[in-house]
Length: 248
Image (cartoon, rainbow, N blue to C red; front, side, top):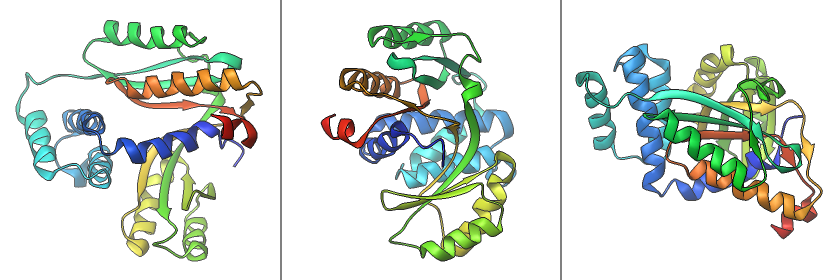
C-alpha cells in the first residue's frame, strides 16, 4: 500500500515488547474508561468499549483490572475525566507527525509534547496542518502461523477490504472506517480473534529520509512520544532505505 512507512513497522515491533509493561495497561485503561463514560458498560451496545476490551485481551491485561476500570467509570461520577486531543507537527526532514492523547491536564500534556518535538528538531503545528496527509483506516491483523493467507485474503476482499498486505509474519487487512466492524466480524467468525484490531491513520504518501542522523532523531522523537503516559498513539509518514534502517 502506498502509505506503508517505516514508523508503522517499528512501532508494531516495539509494541510487542511494550506489551509486558504496566504502561501499556495504563493506556488501555484510559481507553476503557473513556469508552464506558461515553456509551455505557455493555460492550454489545458500545463498539468502542468492545474494541478496547479486545485490545486488553491481546495485551494480556488481567480481567480483574478490566472489571475494576469498568465499574469505576460506570459508577463513580467523580472518577478522572480524560480529554481526547490530537497534536500535529513535523519532525526533522519534513516528516509529518500526528499524536493522539488522552489527558486530565491539557496544559501539562501540551507542554510535554511540544518539548519532545523541539528537543529532536521538530516543531508542533496547528490542528489540521498534517492530518490531510493521512487516511483514516481500520487495521485487522492475523499471524500467518495461525491462518491460511490465501483464504484470509479472499474473505477480506469479498467483504470490501481496502488493502491486504503481508508484513513481518502477519497479514494486515485495511478497511474503510465504516466497514471496519463488519469486516472484523466476518474475519473473526472464520479465523477466531484477530491479533490486532484497531483504528489507525495511514499516510497517503511517504517522505524519504536520506540522512542517518535525521533518521535517528526521528526514531528517538517518536519513541519518546509513544512513551509519554498521555499519548495513546502516534503516526508519521517517514520512510528510509533498508541500508539506513540497518544502521539504526
